[in-house]
Length: 477
Image (cartoon, rainbow, N blue to C red; front, top):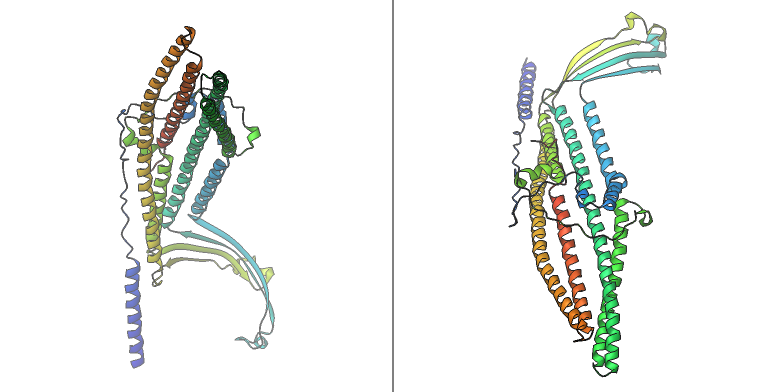
């Protein structure tokens, strides 16, 4: 009697401990509430905000067929785009994998076993009258797991969100690739134009060297003037060599961006740089985040991490599943398909770990930490987007102001050339002042080219900073 009471008390203690553990298991952490930046703090430059948003093929606005060919070829064959496509396909397979875990499962199984009974077993063979026997089984198992707590649904949504992030990353890769090609191509154009100016300067210096030599021979000038001209000529020849080297490197960079050989690039000819007059759109602060593919990708990663925390929370609740078996079993193969060999079964299973040494809370903590990292990355992407847009617009404004000043300097140099030409025509002086004025004008043209390139590169950066196309349609709200 005392032993029975002791067993009852022990049973009650075990049941109470199990109940308390179960209550603890069914008490998951609170749901996560997102707090994300909703707008980009952009410092608007003084030139105002009256521009339009870039189009999907913004590089066509520069009206350069060669640039169009380069960018379109890169979109079709560049390694960066191929890598982005591979990541998208991998994400799509993850979606299929998560989707396949939902719903009903059915498995067929069949086995045939021939086995010998031990003479020293629980049922010795001498009592049964045989040592060897056959066991045949044939059946279909059906299983359905309920997703009452949304764990499987959260896993599927997380996989979908990662797939959306990969698609946005591909668009960001396209945008970055188009910007890199445009930057390198226009740098090549600028190098070609500056090389022509350097060659023109060298031709003028050769004439100047001949003039100073004659004047030195006639004792109208010192030998130092000839030495100074030779020094200037060496400087310009060095600059020309540097520009040739830069142009070769730019060709190599273009080929690398396209994933091809430099010899297969389309023929490039020198042409004037396009003029830009870009600024920030009126609604840049409200719409920038929806247009930047890198920000959209970061936002989707936040959503995926949030769904992972939902799945981790759902693991605190029990898994409930239905199982059914329609099977046949017989120790004689010839009787396996008879009705009296049937072994049907059906049942319900509830699975809830009562003690897991904190495994589920650790998994939820890891998911929460991953979400915190994704949120921090998103906030950083928002701040960077605002900074890049404002910096590009400010660079365009600065280049515009510089161009105005250098245009005035170039106009003054033209006036000096006209004066020198008039004095030469009136035989009031020799050709030396005209050659010097020509060199000064070429130097100012070179400086103006560099300012125009700075403005053009800033315009490309602005188009990239503004997202380079329409809003991302499926950005989470």
